Image (cartoon, rainbow, N blue to C red; front, side, top):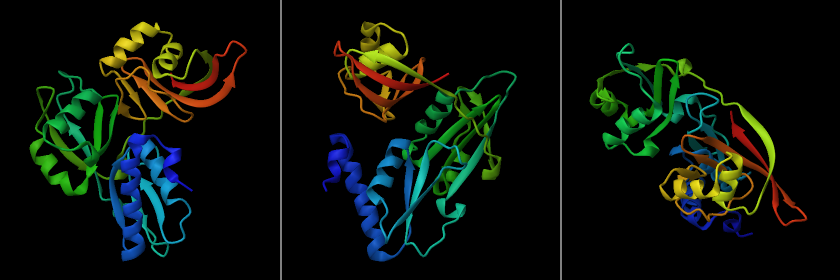
Length: 257
């Protein structure tokens, strides 16, 4: 079976990488810890590794509901622990009375240090508590160099993973009809926007398809895809139920409240 047929062309390089990870574990009988993966990448790892007799895979991102997680590929005779995922949780101390810190502020601060996105996981904003998870090998560097966020002086405190805040999203399901399975058509109908406006936002880089920025309104959506539009929310294409008599597509979407 050709595994590539189940995935988009732009995902083939990542599939090759996962195959190499699996080969290393099989040949060298050792653990392979990956960078932080988004949920789509996690799904690809599960599919590629499958129920392989010689390789198992587990995922962890600091807590059970973490979105971005590291994968650990390992021989079946090994029982992995949380320590094997090499995660460090930081809590941000900042002047809460004078500044409000948002997700994008923390993201920007980390990227401005030269930290690659694959080296840190979820950023959690709960009330006035700001936390984020990084790979342990860069934790000392991040703690020393992240001294400001959004022009506010900050300091980082390392906390046990058991103190990681959990922010659960609530999803609501809806059945809609769309003229096509193009990205602009699905987003416009889901968020009740004009298609022309959505096309403009997509071309400006405001949309993501499976956690990757897409600037082509004509990108085709598939069952299981997660879509997002900045300032409007996220939705998941749960089911493609078929076409109506007027040749429109009936789909089931889940969107964040």
